[in-house]
View 1 (spheres, rainbow, N blue to C red):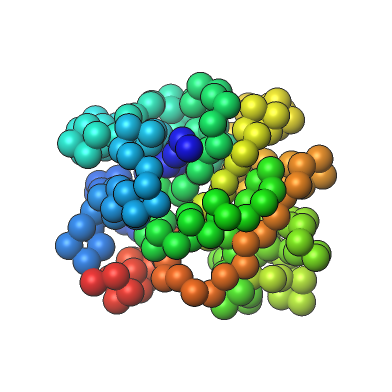
View 2: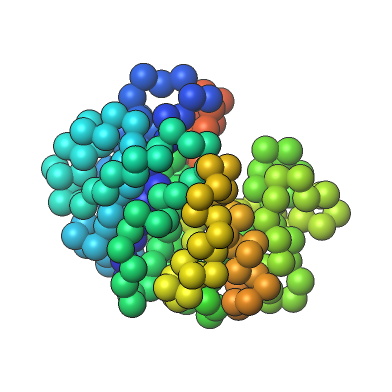
Length: 226
């Protein structure tokens, strides 16, 4: 199992002067919380690569302290996240991709590993209506589409910003057309894969998590994880 943490962006909505992954939640940086959750899953720091961009050296120094690898995305100023996927050399190992600003309990990754599919997307049914939520459309045991614009009537819940990919070599080739799109996100790649791969949701409301995009999100994360 390899892990790719997407942490290249500047996080302008949060208003912090440091990379979001170095922001503290409950007295610990989000980066160190990633390390703790991954350790519970049984993933060693040497299997983790953090994609850097904004203030890359600061993130790299913290990653070295934890034993994690880093790789620099020279296109970090673009608004999309998908370019970070292409800076990682392809391997045959399953790949767990995690948004860098996600604070999460280890059970989310453990449940994803137990789910069968080429791509597994954890989905929380508790947040179906939030206009800022990346909502998931599901039919049976297949994930059809991810979009913030999805009508509530078609939403099975919110994608949490975690993706398990068991065949990322094929996904990389399938979605190569997105590599040069500065707006492309990893959600766009999942939508493209849904037509050719077995993309499955893992729907659960049993775990605590928060994606920290804004000061309000940070306050919520503090209350959940302090």
